[in-house]
Image 1 (cartoon, rainbow, N blue to C red):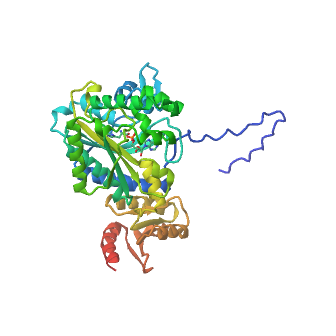
Image 2: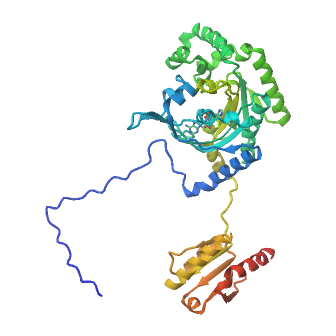
Image 3: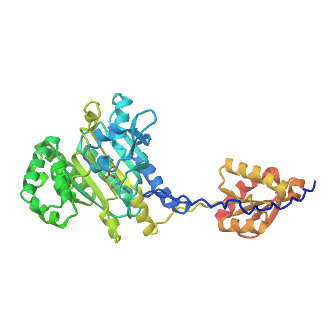
Length: 447
Ligand code: HAM
């Protein structure tokens, strides 16, 4: 029935002018990982899974939201991460929760909570996912960052530390990124306390040369002065006491064994006596990875870091439990991969399903589903009407065969099968499409 022609609405002179709403943009420090970026992310995800599985790690996913106390106790009340960078809020029910800024504390919580102590040790876990830090956004620094990490719980031997350093380095190497490991030992909490006193005594006599920020650190978290970028501190550092001279005998021996393993594994490392890391849970080995790149910002930002945390479980209310791990910063690694034009896997297809007319489209729909179920990489463009446009897409996607279903084929119970290389076409029984494709594909590939 023809629709009644509607009268044009008469615009009232005093009708209020509707303003278009302002577009909503990303929250500062957040980013979209767009389809064009996904091949690089797939490369990292695939490599993370492959290496973790090869080295006997099992996947774990912990929630993004945890009780704030987990990070205050686990990561440390006076660390930058907890003091300045935690996304914390109170829920409607009055719980104090935070978005996870890292995953090690959550994993140890999960280990304790689920009694993993009763399983054969060590427990080897890996994870990949977003973390949240209210950091100052800049190149390579986001407020939602993504990490791939591995943790080994229940084993205190030096070989574990070395293996973790090796895997983190190998992850980069196999992605085509040459990196150097910086490594140090920060000993036990006792040896660290003695060192901290020596460091405070040293910097206190030079207090007038320190910036306001570093003066605060001297009182609150003196070891972090060693991370200061201030040139004055850089100079003072050269004469400052070094933690290696304060290590207890066991930590020293442990560190030597870690280095011997690394020599054996041929991992390039540099001893960095000032590396202390920004999380409180570390004991003994700490390490960071830096990419050899010409991008100055990225060269100075660690692409990964980790270490041993033998005291973390007890801080979180668990039994004594040795542990060690690392986390890689995938956002920074993605930038490096993009910069180096790393080869990425292309999503090649074998078959394209083209259709013409409503009936053709319906039939094509079920053929496409049969192809998918039989594991043949296929593509379609059901929203397109023109065969020419569909053939162009088939060409672009590298299809070897195209199945064409039009009105006539639907009526005849047939399909047209076109070999894209030779341009030859044949008409086949629609019920034999999958069978024919299975037969033809190996022949085409053999050419
Ligand atoms: P982390 O050093 O704080 O260690 O973070 C690991 C990596 O995450 C860094 O080396 C860096 O590449 C990346 N990252 C950190 N913050 C940002 C940011 N704002 N934007 C982009 N990337 C960032 C940890 O998180 C420990 N949980 C590692 C660990 C596991 N230790 C023992 N087990």
